Length: 100
Image: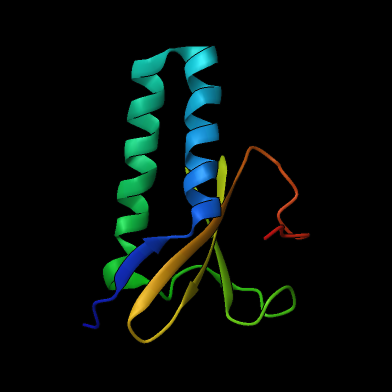
């Protein structure tokens, strides 16, 4: 089994912060922290299964996307040594016109 390092691009880190703030405003800090922790744990699983999700070379070469709990679309790339989480899209945001 190939192991890869999982890294979050600065834009993905910003997405996590924005998402956490948004959830905290609506459902409270504890709920937000729990959700973000689950999301980060899910992404950490790319270490051993980074080639999951759907390839979307039509949008960007090497791009993969996968859903998390039916609310977040995770956009990432995979190399031989690293999985890079590029962006996170929450609740129906348009990810096909990727920013960044």
